[in-house]
Length: 571
Image (cartoon, rainbow, N blue to C red; front, side, top):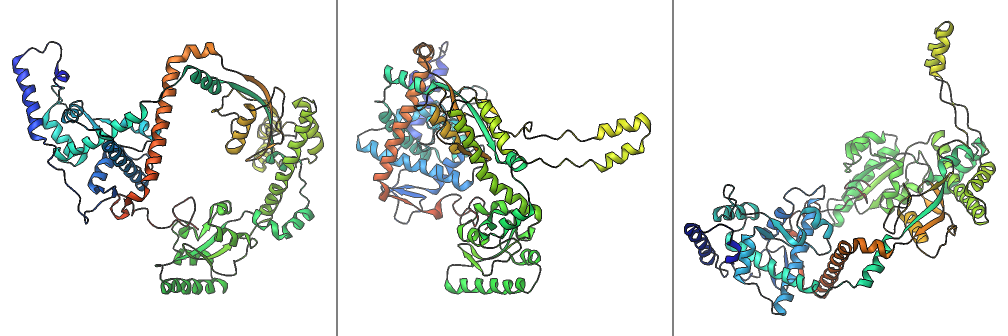
């Protein structure tokens, strides 16, 4: 350990005496047996693993250390659970290390402290989080240095340990001894991992090979303007079909009466209260006013119980089915029970515009696939993308949109003028020329992507399953000029994709990046090996892990059901 203190030019006898004195303080003042204790059966524990107790204050100390700069928007309960999982993993690794005969010496603990590190465990599968929080490999650099001398200072150390961790020096040493033992076990797991030259080259070629595609997006919004007639008789017939009721998006209102508890009498009381409100609604009382007065849903209460119709898909199943069973302007004829309580539900009235919009949206989904399939078939038969698009536009774009209405105020202003001045004002206020099916920016167009690799973003604004399908197609068995077997579904229609080029990565390119790439690959493989090991360890020790939610920081703050699948409150 004395090697740690040797610095160039430090020959002063006095300085040497100070160093020796500091060492003696550690040896005498930090007896490792002090502070060790066996947890009693009644001891409060956030978790127990193989009989070892993770005390709530130890959990809180680790939480404060890891999230000292805040949780970045993460809920406290989520952040707290991540910290607890890290401590559980540490104890599992400590048990394994002890089984294998690994130990940590007092000198190793002291060296770690003198280097200014506090070690803390996060789950092995949270590599990105560790990097983002600055605790990669479990090290938080505190320093423990005197601000003036820039050297380790005992008083600074004691003050910071108490301030940051809330632990005494003896408790802190015991904590760090377990962290160091777990770190040794991690090193032992990662040590055998190697990266062979051929493996690195093959992986490099797989990752760095790029592709470029031609693509056509057939948007529903374009078809709604130019390919779907808006005849009143067609819209009325469509609206009378009950299977289309759910497609009409109008605001949904509800009044929630929560259960006070799970006992039958408590549920009966909630139901009776809901039924009384329901009877008042059926007699004609204002739904919005009753919602503001009685609803237990804070997410909609102040808005008269209202949620946008587009949100219904995110609601729990009983609520969603109840909404879909009735048309706009209709009250669901019975109370709806969910895990959150009893709901009184009503859909707002639909305007003619609401119905026409829903009609077009429904028809455009079917038609967008039809148009995309036509373009795809033409391109497969040898037509160029541009020719295939022109044929589709000519065949399907049969509706001429109404001319835009002139701005009444601008027209009046122009009329008020005289001579050339009046004409100039009117011309300046005239609306922009209307688009046609052939010039509208949303029309089907042949585009070419930038080069992308297997982990890249093939086409802007295309995400999810469609993006994955484009990547799979581009790096599968497709050859230059091939078109996807079927059009791919997107958020606003369908997508036709043609492989333009695939550019394989070369060994020469690999040689230029070899060292850095191999190190990155080695780190990834070691992280994967550690993650797999700890997952297996946790699975085999599942029955030995006991978590007490009452002693977990933040667990109670997020307790209780959230009526809405995506938000904290809502149906």
